[in-house]
Length: 139
Image 1: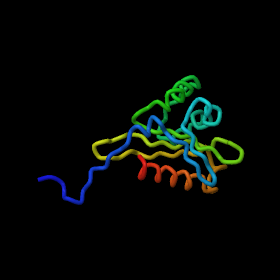
Image 2 (image 1 turned 180 degrees about the vertical axis):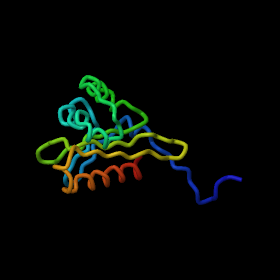
Image 3 (image 1 turned 60 degrees about the horizontal axis):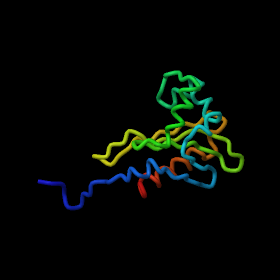
Image 4 (image 1 turned 135 degrees about the vertical axis):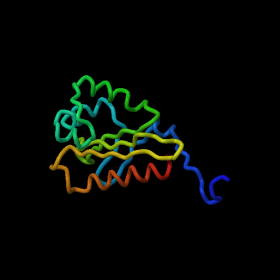
C-alpha cells in the first residue's frame, strides 16, 4: 500500500541551487558565495574557534578556500551564501543549505557568523528567515 492520499512527496528544484538567487532583507543581503568574499570570510577559516562553529576542525590554506569559493556557485547539491551587511557591504559570515536528500525532500541548514561583534543585531535571525523562505517556497 502506498502513502496516504494527503501525503505529497516534496520535490526540490535543484536548478535553483546552480542558479542561486541573491536574497535581500532589511539588514542583510545573501550573495551567492564566490572568490569576491574571500577577504571577508577568511577570518572564519583562519580562526580555530570560529571554524569549529562551522563544523570543521580542518585548517585550510588560503588557496584552498579560494578554490572552493571559485566553484561554490556551480554545485548542484548545495547553496552557499555570504552574509553581507546592507549599507557598508561588510561580510558577516556564511549560510549554507547542504546534504541534499532528494528522496526525502530535505537539506541541512548551517549558519556561521564571524564573531561576537556581529551577534545580537538580528543578522542571524534575518538570514535564517530568508533561507527558510527560499527553501520552503521556490526550492
